[in-house]
Length: 137
Image 1 (cartoon, rainbow, N blue to C red):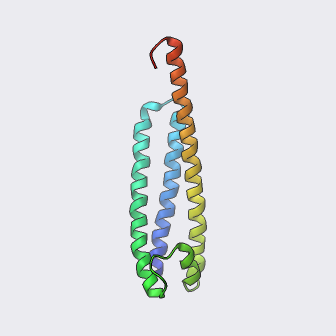
Image 2: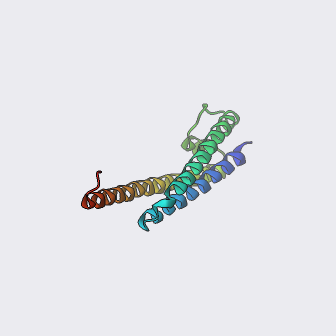
Image 3: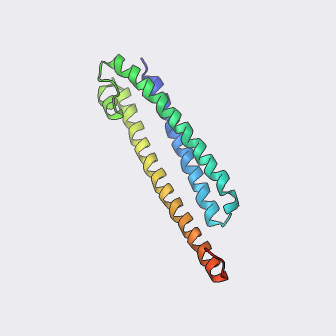
């Protein structure tokens, strides 16, 4: 069965979410330290992790389709569907993955919002400095 394969893919997604959290934190630290010179590099690293997450999601979708056929459930099942349909201990394993992924996504969203806020503050500060210096904004 593809149970282990899907679980392994979910582990990869969890690790990628953690890496994304780290990269977003790096961006925040750079902005907070005023080291905006390195911001394009940090942003590129975030984008690379996002691409890897998209690849993992596609890989998971393909594997889940095969698993759905093996389990005799409707195509394109959600992770919740797998929790209720998979034999034990896999239902519990998928439940833990689902919980961890939800927490990871929430943390990424929180970090992304914080990064946006910090960048907005930095841009506003630069505009204020330019206006004070008499430069056109």
